[in-house]
Structures are given as structure tokens and as C-alpha cells.
Length: 69
Image 1 (cartoon, rainbow, N blue to C red):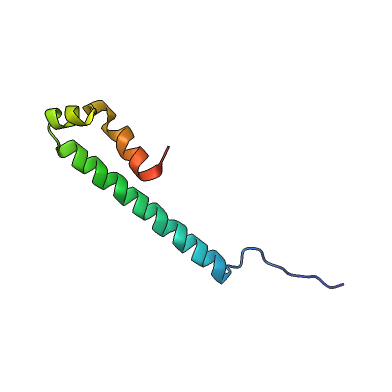
Image 2 (cartoon, rainbow, N blue to C red; image 1 turned 90 degrees about the vertical axis):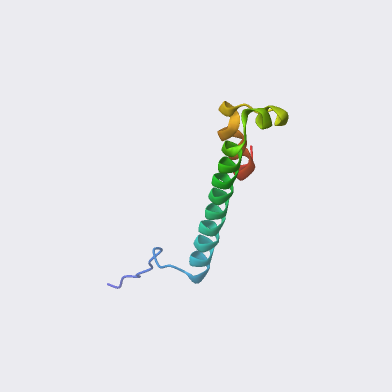
């Protein structure tokens, strides 16, 4: 009796490349989110009002800027 051993868990170079690209993209989006959040939080209430924003809407604006709708 013979057995065929095929492992689907073996990491192919393309899979590693895809995972690396996904990690880089996620890292970049997270960095955009944090930077946008920081910049908006540093604005005064008057500046935010000029932009049509309130302090309670800062996180949603930063999330949209980084991750889209």
C-alpha cells in the first residue's frame, strides 16, 4: 500500500510575498490613521469648526481617511 503525502501547509514563495504585501499595506493604513488622528486632535475647536468637524467625529474621519468607507 502506498500513501501520497501532499502538504497544503507548505509555504510557497508567492504566499510569503502576498502575506508580506498585506502586512505592509495594513501597516501603512494604520500609520495614516494614527497620523490623521494626531493631526486632527491637535487642532483647536475653532479650526475643527472651520472644517465642519467636531471632536466626536475625529475618529470616524481618521478611519475613513485610512481605510475608506
